[in-house]
Amino acid sequence: MSPTAAQERLATSAGALTLRSVASGLVHPWGIAALPEGGFLVTERPGRLRHVRADGAVSPPLAGVPPVFDSGQGGLLDVTLAPDFATSRGVYLTFAEARDGGAATSLARGRLNESLTALEGVEVLFRAQPARSGGRHFGSRVVLAPDGESLFVTLGDRGADESAQDLGQHHGKVVRLTLDGAPYPGNPFLDRADALPEIWSYGHRNPQGAALEPGTERLFTAEMGPRGGDEINAPRPGVNFGWPLVSDGSQYSGIPIPDHGTDTSLEPPLWGWSPSFSPSGIAFYDGELIPGWRGDLIVGALSGQALARLDVEDGRIVSEEILPLDRRIRAVTTGADGALYLLVDDDRGALLRLAPAGAG
Image (cartoon, rainbow, N blue to C red):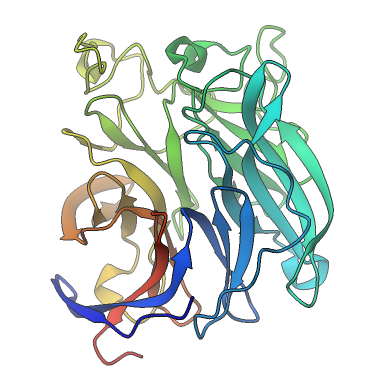
């Protein structure tokens, strides 16, 4: 699992950047979290959590990870650190969990031991309902909210379009939870008997990216549409984002879907791609190495096999730059060194580093 020495030089709006492999041999890596002591925690979809050191060495699988439903798009998904990680060593995971009736997305929390070999005291804090058969559309990203006392979890519609409009199900929603997994006290549907109290926004298809915008702390999500109609959205409490009532794509069967302009009561996307780009992990770049990109939204693409840089101004996306990479990019994050780190989703996946030429 040693990193390769090969480097690629990319011409970008920020000048020449170098892309190199930090670690290889990862199997469908999905989520990444930078550790304050250096290196990263990386999830592999089949159910493994690994520590990738700054020098590229990849650990054996950490013990204590909950069993996952490894089928289709299901498995071990996102990872993020608790806001008090420096003292609690808390780590949050989202994963597809097998249950009676099928499977659904769950959120768990454990404590990373000092030797970086295991999660201890793991408990499941939230289980999306209901369980469904099949292996489609689990989401899922977990993002700490600006208050430091709650978090957002994005949930796919599990391949059942209508569930995204049903407030009695968690599927096709963004939920907001306390750090212990309870409904957030400010959620919009707490007092409605016909709605689940965890729901923050709804009408989503399969949001596989989520990030907070520095400065404004607005939540942005990347959402896979059907045939075309991939979206960037900014979820807000109680807002309906339209799936499957509207979309700028069509069903895989070829059946058309009314576009967003046909119903102004439903929130349109901030940005979209058609044909499909398959956006997955996203991150706002807030490092120092690439000053021209500070504040921009960086989007990894699966079928697009590229990185997109979206210029965000006053809550609007005003332009796009596409960097073809010929790899399926599943997740993106800014490292402590100011470089961008990318996960390549493949059975021979990798962790890549993107930085200016000569910056290490």
